[in-house]
Length: 213
Image (tube, rainbow, N blue to C red; front, side, top):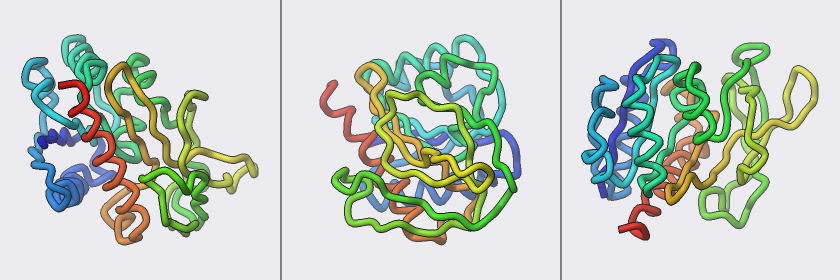
């Protein structure tokens, strides 16, 4: 299987180093990953359709009309998309079509980095199976979210006590979509559950491609 990691944007999310963590996790699961630091890698739809998975890790930024169309169409036709934190959930803020596909968009992280608990709410799903609730010391993302998402993990917002989705999956046409709001920087992935969830989510998204070929 083949994946494309497109990384860049705001430097605070360590796009280069985090993309290396992602590539290593994919490689250890039999998925050959190419890393690209330019959005021009989204210019060729035919090339995207040869992939099993696209991993955006590009906080903020702007897609051209053609890049946006190609990315969304590739997923519609069965290419998986998966990612984490602001690299996928706060990318391309001026692009509601992209946000609709992802199933959410970052709004705020009240309190900055803080200690909080991630609650596993679906223990039967293969992405979160055999995992227990765990603690993070990171940003707690407050997001606009699509109510049709299949939520796998949540947290209780420290600012107002409401329940926030942390991990979800969904379909976009024939393509599988996975997102985790964890992964602010490489340090987050020192928490084993954080890396396990992302790794399993990417593998789940990539495997959907086989059924469309």
